[in-house]
Image 1 (cartoon, rainbow, N blue to C red):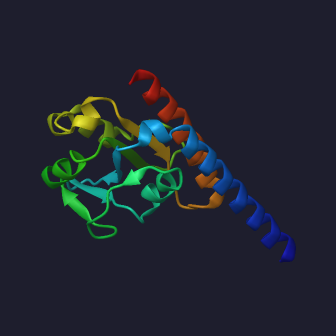
Image 2 (cartoon, helix red, strand yellow; image 1 turned 90 degrees about the vertical axis):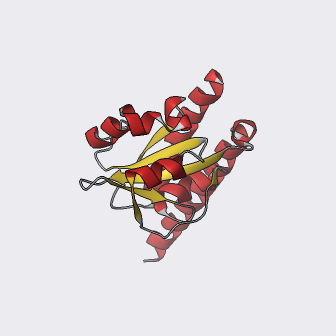
Length: 160
């Protein structure tokens, strides 16, 4: 047990260090930009928006992304309501793809490509970031998400 605790503490410290480094690297690009996370588009047409404090918002916040606050944790909203909320964001973090792929799930992609999705300024501008998401939601996954955020923010900053 002692060895496992030490390994876990070491992993947490490494993830926090990497998050700080990535945050410093992208501080200028992130300054003044607000982000909102979306976890899923449900079969009934509702969208799960994740505000500050929820998983798909927590790791981006670790690197200094300003995550929009509000809403009820775990809440879903009609597509029209979600479009209004998402329109306030400069960056949209997309979670929910438990396959490990860094492309949106087909229903998510259909929404993004559709009329409602294209009405969202960040979507239209290509300011979306697909992150790995999943059941384990561990420090190991957080480290992977930070790497993905770093790569995508580098791309976005380069095209700004």
